[in-house]
Image 1 (cartoon, helix red, strand yellow):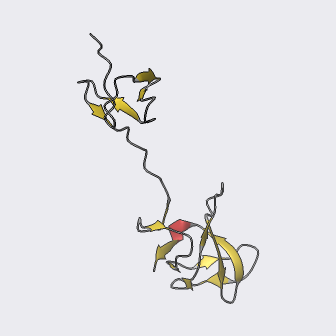
Image 2 (cartoon, one colour):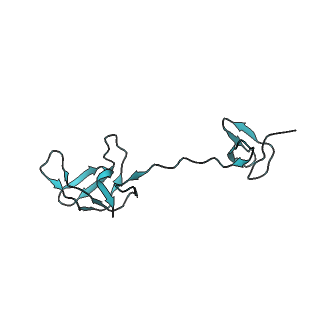
Image 3 (cartoon, one colour):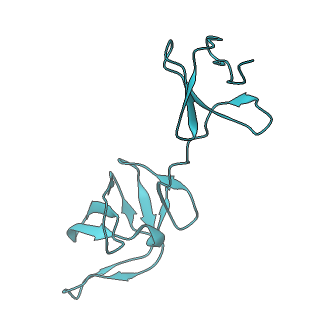
Length: 119
């Protein structure tokens, strides 16, 4: 008797195991099998995303508000708390500055998401 699970999508019996997944060669569906041999779709890990100071997920083009005064490195300028920043771009960064933007009166700069809140 064949103990291999059937495909939950097309009920094919020609399934095979590949690593920790089961694969159906007929419909190319992939799934994991629970210990009780019940088929279940493999869960996808949630996307981390970039979050603001209050835990809201940010996206390109969002408008944010600076929550505290920030000194501009290499300048005597300060970005005041409450400043609205429009059309942000999210960038990958190793130094934590993951928002690229233009601020009126200061120009182009990068911000850390922990110092802004979504508007």
